Amino acid sequence: MQPIINSQISSLKESATLSINQHALKLRNEGRDICHLGFGESPFPVPDPMQVALRENSHRKQYITGKGLPELRKAVADFFHNKFGYNYAAENVFIGPGSKELIFQHVYLLEGPLMVPTPSWVSYGPQANIRSKLFITIPTDIKNGYRLQAEELDETFSRQKFLQSILILNNPNNPSGSVHSSDELQDLAEVCRKHGVIVISDEIYALTKFGSQSFEGIAKYYPEGTITTSGISKAFSAGGWRLGFAMIPNELSEIVPPLSAFVSETFSCVSAPVQYGSLPAFENYENVRKHVELCRDIHEAAGEFLHQRFIEIGLNCPKPQGAFYLLPDFENIKEKLKSQGVQTSVELTKRLLDEAGVALLPASDFYFPDDFLGVRVASVDYNGAQVLREFPVNKQLTQEGKAKLFPKLAEACDRIETWLK
Image (cartoon, rainbow, N blue to C red; front, side):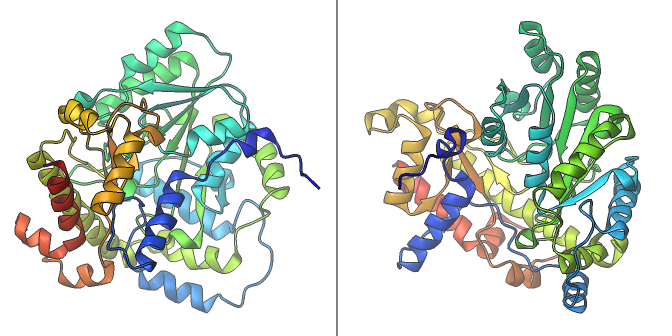
């Protein structure tokens, strides 16, 4: 029998981030020496209080309400209020199997086109396509660190009007590592308010913002129209636990009943032990704060190391301000690469993997034009537990010191530099 498959699904390719991870690991298992800069998985151990709570609650086998464990929903709402000044009610918090799934549920539920800045995370576009939703990318400029500007968003609305539209703002950003300033967020909020935009603020990297200035999200300036999503995969290094959450403002509370029904007919609820295991991350954040902040500082050091090396190699690359990604491009040597048969970012990453043993993702996966020779770099190819022990807290690290801490990152840069000669 030949099955007939939904064309919206059969046309999908596997998520680029998951695909490169499996491919790089396969090559390593086959004996290839690969510098794996393609997949953004935090390399650190899950904080001890969370591991203890997971073990102590492994016996819990009951279904939990679809919206999530009440204690966890309250802890999440309280944490984001105390940390970032948000005012989400616990009854409007949903716990899901990763923020990725909850973003998809909102994209599916809400009418209107989906807009994202270029660059943005790889899965937003495919999620819109599954829903047959109009998907609009908004080009940004490297001179602004690829941060969406208010005039760029406003220009999008000057070309066409929508009864309702959705903007996903990933801040801090994957793939560029950029973080919006408070002034930029205020300006974006004014445009969103003017046009009645529903914002999904993807803040999965909020606790990995670098520098002394505290992270701010657009919900601080546009609370009535912002749904904030996050989870435990990045700052708490628990990607495989699959737990995320979405927080809906009271002004959009009409979303809550249909979303509850949607959840009940799809994933039902998140694993009970995982929900209890996640409680300490938010209910007693002080017990895990030092661990989270040390991991953040290590991410910053790795990003700074790669940024400096990329500049030395002659690549364009905004300095990352958060997360664990960089977006260098080879546009300065485009003609040279073209003469060698490299005309797209897909060809560039394939050649770098095949000939230099460096796994990267092409910029085209993040909605850039095919001929833009950019790559997404994940700065996490190192032994997280070892680096946690060896990282010199409160000491200035040299490039040489960072190269010793992150040998695979240093080797990747050396291989790219050699390949370009």
